[in-house]
Image 1 (cartoon, rainbow, N blue to C red):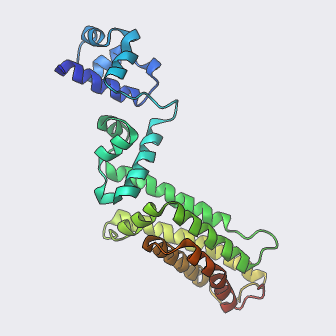
Image 2 (cartoon, rainbow, N blue to C red; image 1 turned 135 degrees about the vertical axis):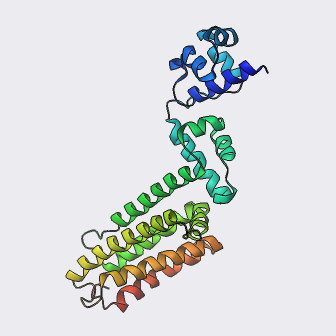
Length: 259
Protein backbone atom coordinates (compact mmCIF):
# COMPACT_ATOMS: atom_id res chain seq x y z
CA UNK A 1 0.00 0.00 0.00
CA UNK A 2 1.37 3.41 -0.91
CA UNK A 3 2.15 5.77 1.95
CA UNK A 4 -0.54 8.25 0.86
CA UNK A 5 -3.23 5.58 0.87
CA UNK A 6 -2.11 4.39 4.32
CA UNK A 7 -2.37 7.95 5.67
CA UNK A 8 -5.83 8.35 4.15
CA UNK A 9 -6.93 5.05 5.64
CA UNK A 10 -5.83 6.14 9.13
CA UNK A 11 -7.57 9.50 8.79
CA UNK A 12 -10.81 7.91 7.59
CA UNK A 13 -10.63 5.38 10.44
CA UNK A 14 -10.38 8.14 13.01
CA UNK A 15 -13.27 10.10 11.54
CA UNK A 16 -15.47 7.02 11.07
CA UNK A 17 -14.97 6.24 14.76
CA UNK A 18 -16.29 9.64 15.82
CA UNK A 19 -19.14 10.42 13.41
CA UNK A 20 -21.56 8.86 10.91
CA UNK A 21 -20.08 8.19 7.49
CA UNK A 22 -22.43 10.70 5.88
CA UNK A 23 -20.85 13.50 7.91
CA UNK A 24 -17.26 12.77 6.89
CA UNK A 25 -15.86 15.44 4.60
CA UNK A 26 -12.97 14.67 2.30
CA UNK A 27 -11.46 18.04 3.13
CA UNK A 28 -11.24 16.93 6.76
CA UNK A 29 -9.71 13.60 5.67
CA UNK A 30 -7.09 15.53 3.72
CA UNK A 31 -6.36 17.76 6.71
CA UNK A 32 -5.90 14.81 9.10
CA UNK A 33 -3.83 12.83 6.58
CA UNK A 34 -1.64 15.79 5.68
CA UNK A 35 -2.37 15.20 2.01
CA UNK A 36 -3.92 17.42 -0.62
CA UNK A 37 -7.66 17.17 -1.21
CA UNK A 38 -7.20 16.15 -4.88
CA UNK A 39 -5.01 13.24 -3.80
CA UNK A 40 -7.66 12.11 -1.30
CA UNK A 41 -10.36 12.29 -3.98
CA UNK A 42 -8.13 10.25 -6.29
CA UNK A 43 -7.79 7.36 -3.83
CA UNK A 44 -11.30 7.51 -2.36
CA UNK A 45 -12.98 8.09 -5.74
CA UNK A 46 -14.89 11.09 -4.47
CA UNK A 47 -17.53 11.36 -1.74
CA UNK A 48 -19.59 8.61 -3.39
CA UNK A 49 -16.66 6.20 -3.14
CA UNK A 50 -16.05 6.67 0.59
CA UNK A 51 -18.03 3.62 1.73
CA UNK A 52 -16.34 1.43 -0.87
CA UNK A 53 -12.95 2.71 0.28
CA UNK A 54 -13.87 1.87 3.88
CA UNK A 55 -15.04 -1.60 2.91
CA UNK A 56 -11.80 -2.31 1.01
CA UNK A 57 -9.74 -1.35 4.03
CA UNK A 58 -11.96 -2.96 6.68
CA UNK A 59 -12.80 0.37 8.29
CA UNK A 60 -15.75 0.07 10.67
CA UNK A 61 -18.23 2.94 10.72
CA UNK A 62 -19.92 4.29 13.84
CA UNK A 63 -22.08 1.47 15.16
CA UNK A 64 -25.67 2.37 14.39
CA UNK A 65 -25.45 5.68 16.14
CA UNK A 66 -24.01 4.31 19.40
CA UNK A 67 -21.41 6.70 20.78
CA UNK A 68 -17.87 5.57 20.03
CA UNK A 69 -16.52 6.28 23.55
CA UNK A 70 -19.14 3.91 24.95
CA UNK A 71 -18.08 1.20 22.52
CA UNK A 72 -14.47 1.62 23.57
CA UNK A 73 -15.36 1.57 27.26
CA UNK A 74 -17.39 -1.60 26.84
CA UNK A 75 -14.51 -3.22 24.96
CA UNK A 76 -12.08 -2.11 27.67
CA UNK A 77 -14.35 -3.53 30.37
CA UNK A 78 -14.30 -6.94 28.65
CA UNK A 79 -10.53 -6.86 28.09
CA UNK A 80 -9.73 -5.82 31.67
CA UNK A 81 -12.03 -8.52 33.04
CA UNK A 82 -10.45 -11.18 30.82
CA UNK A 83 -6.78 -10.21 30.95
CA UNK A 84 -6.44 -8.18 34.13
CA UNK A 85 -5.01 -4.69 34.27
CA UNK A 86 -1.37 -5.64 33.60
CA UNK A 87 -2.24 -8.04 30.78
CA UNK A 88 -4.49 -5.57 28.94
CA UNK A 89 -3.05 -3.27 26.27
CA UNK A 90 -4.48 -0.54 24.09
CA UNK A 91 -3.97 -2.90 21.14
CA UNK A 92 -6.20 -5.48 22.83
CA UNK A 93 -8.84 -2.85 23.56
CA UNK A 94 -8.77 -1.49 20.01
CA UNK A 95 -9.15 -5.00 18.61
CA UNK A 96 -12.05 -5.76 20.95
CA UNK A 97 -13.75 -2.54 19.86
CA UNK A 98 -13.04 -3.36 16.20
CA UNK A 99 -11.27 -0.02 15.79
CA UNK A 100 -7.80 1.24 15.09
CA UNK A 101 -5.58 2.13 18.03
CA UNK A 102 -5.53 5.69 16.75
CA UNK A 103 -9.31 5.89 17.09
CA UNK A 104 -9.07 4.71 20.71
CA UNK A 105 -6.38 7.29 21.50
CA UNK A 106 -8.61 9.94 19.93
CA UNK A 107 -10.98 9.50 22.88
CA UNK A 108 -8.80 8.27 25.75
CA UNK A 109 -5.25 9.16 26.75
CA UNK A 110 -4.11 5.73 27.84
CA UNK A 111 -5.04 2.46 29.53
CA UNK A 112 -5.06 4.04 32.96
CA UNK A 113 -7.52 6.70 31.80
CA UNK A 114 -9.90 3.99 30.57
CA UNK A 115 -9.56 1.97 33.75
CA UNK A 116 -10.32 4.85 36.10
CA UNK A 117 -13.41 5.83 34.15
CA UNK A 118 -14.66 2.24 34.36
CA UNK A 119 -13.76 2.07 38.06
CA UNK A 120 -15.72 5.24 38.76
CA UNK A 121 -18.72 3.76 36.99
CA UNK A 122 -18.49 0.56 38.98
CA UNK A 123 -18.21 2.58 42.17
CA UNK A 124 -21.34 4.52 41.22
CA UNK A 125 -23.18 1.24 40.60
CA UNK A 126 -22.25 0.04 44.07
CA UNK A 127 -23.33 3.36 45.52
CA UNK A 128 -26.68 2.92 43.82
CA UNK A 129 -26.93 -0.55 45.32
CA UNK A 130 -26.32 0.90 48.75
CA UNK A 131 -28.95 3.56 48.10
CA UNK A 132 -31.43 0.88 47.08
CA UNK A 133 -30.75 -0.98 50.32
CA UNK A 134 -32.93 1.42 52.31
CA UNK A 135 -35.56 -0.75 53.97
CA UNK A 136 -39.06 -0.62 52.45
CA UNK A 137 -41.94 0.00 54.82
CA UNK A 138 -42.58 -3.06 56.98
CA UNK A 139 -39.26 -4.76 56.16
CA UNK A 140 -37.30 -5.96 59.18
CA UNK A 141 -33.60 -5.30 59.60
CA UNK A 142 -32.86 -8.98 59.02
CA UNK A 143 -34.84 -9.04 55.79
CA UNK A 144 -33.13 -5.88 54.60
CA UNK A 145 -29.67 -7.30 55.25
CA UNK A 146 -30.55 -10.51 53.45
CA UNK A 147 -31.75 -8.54 50.41
CA UNK A 148 -28.53 -6.54 50.40
CA UNK A 149 -26.29 -9.61 50.61
CA UNK A 150 -28.22 -11.41 47.87
CA UNK A 151 -27.95 -8.39 45.59
CA UNK A 152 -24.21 -8.16 46.18
CA UNK A 153 -23.69 -11.87 45.52
CA UNK A 154 -25.66 -11.71 42.26
CA UNK A 155 -23.53 -8.80 41.07
CA UNK A 156 -20.28 -10.57 41.96
CA UNK A 157 -21.27 -13.78 40.20
CA UNK A 158 -22.38 -11.85 37.11
CA UNK A 159 -18.92 -10.31 36.65
CA UNK A 160 -16.27 -12.53 38.27
CA UNK A 161 -13.53 -11.00 36.11
CA UNK A 162 -14.12 -7.59 37.62
CA UNK A 163 -14.15 -9.07 41.11
CA UNK A 164 -10.66 -10.48 40.49
CA UNK A 165 -9.60 -7.15 39.05
CA UNK A 166 -10.76 -5.46 42.26
CA UNK A 167 -8.20 -7.43 44.28
CA UNK A 168 -5.51 -6.93 41.64
CA UNK A 169 -5.91 -3.16 41.82
CA UNK A 170 -6.28 -3.20 45.62
CA UNK A 171 -2.68 -4.42 45.78
CA UNK A 172 -1.63 -1.15 44.13
CA UNK A 173 -2.75 1.15 46.94
CA UNK A 174 0.77 2.58 47.25
CA UNK A 175 -0.40 4.65 44.29
CA UNK A 176 -2.21 7.71 45.77
CA UNK A 177 -4.88 7.68 43.04
CA UNK A 178 -5.68 4.04 43.70
CA UNK A 179 -5.80 4.53 47.46
CA UNK A 180 -8.04 7.55 47.05
CA UNK A 181 -10.50 5.63 44.87
CA UNK A 182 -10.80 2.73 47.32
CA UNK A 183 -11.05 5.07 50.31
CA UNK A 184 -13.85 6.97 48.64
CA UNK A 185 -15.58 3.69 47.89
CA UNK A 186 -15.36 2.41 51.47
CA UNK A 187 -16.27 5.74 53.07
CA UNK A 188 -19.38 6.08 50.95
CA UNK A 189 -20.64 2.55 51.55
CA UNK A 190 -20.04 2.63 55.30
CA UNK A 191 -21.62 6.07 55.70
CA UNK A 192 -24.61 5.18 53.52
CA UNK A 193 -25.30 1.90 55.33
CA UNK A 194 -24.76 3.61 58.71
CA UNK A 195 -27.61 5.99 57.86
CA UNK A 196 -29.97 3.02 57.46
CA UNK A 197 -28.72 1.49 60.70
CA UNK A 198 -29.35 4.75 62.53
CA UNK A 199 -32.87 4.91 61.13
CA UNK A 200 -33.49 1.30 62.22
CA UNK A 201 -32.26 2.15 65.73
CA UNK A 202 -35.06 4.70 66.03
CA UNK A 203 -37.51 1.89 65.32
CA UNK A 204 -35.88 -0.28 68.03
CA UNK A 205 -34.56 -2.77 65.48
CA UNK A 206 -31.00 -2.28 66.74
CA UNK A 207 -29.65 -1.42 70.15
CA UNK A 208 -29.17 2.30 70.49
CA UNK A 209 -25.79 1.89 72.23
CA UNK A 210 -24.16 0.36 69.14
CA UNK A 211 -22.44 2.81 66.78
CA UNK A 212 -24.13 2.63 63.35
CA UNK A 213 -20.69 2.79 61.73
CA UNK A 214 -19.65 -0.38 63.62
CA UNK A 215 -22.57 -2.34 62.19
CA UNK A 216 -21.86 -0.88 58.74
CA UNK A 217 -18.25 -2.02 59.10
CA UNK A 218 -19.37 -5.59 59.84
CA UNK A 219 -21.79 -5.58 56.90
CA UNK A 220 -19.13 -4.40 54.45
CA UNK A 221 -16.75 -7.02 55.89
CA UNK A 222 -19.27 -9.69 54.89
CA UNK A 223 -19.46 -8.13 51.42
CA UNK A 224 -15.65 -8.30 51.14
CA UNK A 225 -15.76 -11.98 52.14
CA UNK A 226 -18.39 -12.67 49.50
CA UNK A 227 -15.99 -11.15 46.97
CA UNK A 228 -13.23 -13.50 48.09
CA UNK A 229 -15.51 -16.52 47.81
CA UNK A 230 -16.40 -15.48 44.26
CA UNK A 231 -12.73 -15.20 43.26
CA UNK A 232 -11.97 -18.59 44.82
CA UNK A 233 -14.78 -20.19 42.86
CA UNK A 234 -16.87 -21.32 45.84
CA UNK A 235 -20.23 -22.61 44.61
CA UNK A 236 -22.80 -19.80 44.54
CA UNK A 237 -25.55 -21.94 46.07
CA UNK A 238 -23.29 -22.86 48.98
CA UNK A 239 -22.58 -19.21 49.70
CA UNK A 240 -26.22 -18.19 49.21
CA UNK A 241 -27.34 -20.82 51.74
CA UNK A 242 -25.25 -19.07 54.40
CA UNK A 243 -26.72 -15.62 53.90
CA UNK A 244 -29.92 -15.98 55.98
CA UNK A 245 -27.94 -17.12 59.02
CA UNK A 246 -25.32 -14.40 58.49
CA UNK A 247 -28.05 -11.76 58.42
CA UNK A 248 -29.68 -13.31 61.51
CA UNK A 249 -26.41 -13.35 63.47
CA UNK A 250 -25.66 -9.73 62.66
CA UNK A 251 -29.11 -8.52 63.61
CA UNK A 252 -29.67 -10.67 66.70
CA UNK A 253 -26.16 -9.98 67.94
CA UNK A 254 -26.95 -6.29 67.91
CA UNK A 255 -29.99 -6.82 70.11
CA UNK A 256 -32.63 -6.40 67.40
CA UNK A 257 -36.25 -6.58 68.38
CA UNK A 258 -37.37 -6.97 64.80
CA UNK A 259 -36.41 -10.60 64.24
